[in-house]
Amino acid sequence: MMYWLQQTVFKMGFWLTWALIPVVVEILPAFVQGIRLFFKTFRPKKLAMPDKMPFISVVVPVYNSEDTLFACIQSIRESTYPHELVQVILADNQSTDDSFEVFTRAQNRFADMNMQLLHTEQGKAKALNSAIYNAIGTYVINIDSDGILEKNALMNMVLRFENDFEMAALTGTILPQHRMIDNWRHPGKSFLQHNEYFEYAQAFLSGRSIESQQNQLFTMSGAFSAFRKEALLNTFLYNTGTIGEDTDMTFQIRDKLHRKVAICAEAIFYIEPIDSLDSLYIQRQRWQKGEMEVTHEYADKTTMSDFFKNFLVRRMMMDHTFLFPRMIWMFASIALLFLRYSPIMMGMSYVIIYLLYALVSLLNYVCVVQLLRGSSEERHYYVRQWWVAFTLPIYNFICSWIRYIGILNSMVDAKSTWNSTRFSQETRQIKSVIKSDFTRKRGK
Image (cartoon, rainbow, N blue to C red; front, side, top):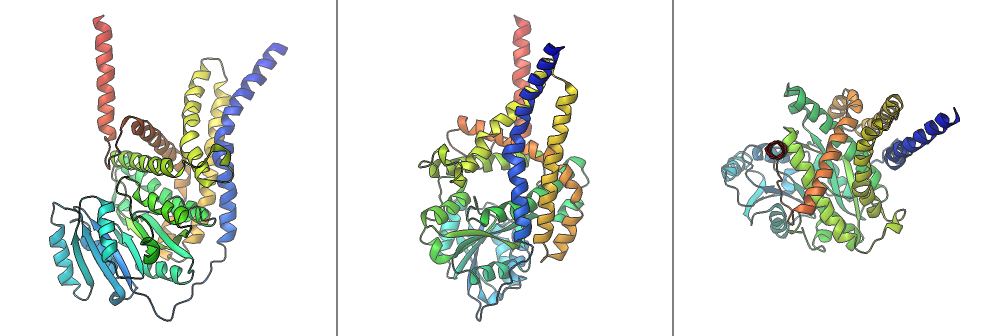
């Protein structure tokens, strides 16, 4: 009897040790930070209107954007920020479609806009750098050509700058267009898009808000970011040697210039929702590779002993180092079944951890609802998405696998590229290898 009792305690203790990894590393810190954010944003700070609004430059990098460019320009024109105080620079980096004709149509339609087109070298970073030298505004605001601005986004962004003169750069809130999400009826795409919307809302309005409070924002979104021009010109501009140029710029301003970088939660930019698992697969691998390139460059002078002092080390540990134990944890749980571990005990531990992740999502959900108080339509839509908090752990699990694959692929690929191999292509390649191995095995 004593033998079986000791075996049970040993096995449970061993398994519980592994089960504590996600709880201690992810769930508890996220829960504590979520509670802090809730109380800090309970009473928003009112922004004062300046006596005179500044002139701003809006830069739009363009590459084969004929389907989305007109709507993007129109959103700038319909913004509540005075259009006579806005310079619009379209930086075309060698488009091969009819983007120029769209620009011409927009120029005729919105003749009162100060708008110009630049032809630049190929590559988003090069296009942005060329446009920066042609910008004459006090603030330079970059937006992607495949999205649209919420009507108050530019005004809210500028007001945030004008009320905090220490602020050097801001990122906006990126959200998928919920009208496009509701148009999809395919179950698989609907699952991806609803979870992507919920993820973006929590990542920007909760995650980046938490990072901003201690000036530890890891990356400004390349889709919508803004700068004081004087701060931008004191950097090395956008790094053309990495696919994480937005993250690199964030580190330049904060770590090299020692300036303040934050999020303007009230400035919303709408993007197209993800259209397939293939697109998600490529996108998240690109993000992972870009993050690794930048952390490799800026982590040279840090050590793992700085875990509690240096947020970059903590981020590397969370996104890279602890990613491997999570994968091992999953495979170990399957292997332990063959060592007569209780399936019920292990199954319950999975359920408990899943519910804890869902609880964190619900806490962030409350924080996001609070932060969306200035946008009634968006808040109303987000409130109705409460149920996604219970599917988000599954979506995040899928994304963590994609990031894991991105790490492995970055070890193989010497040079990072904007587009990687699609999920469907890699699946076919794996099937082909397995089939070839079985054929060879039978031949022997």
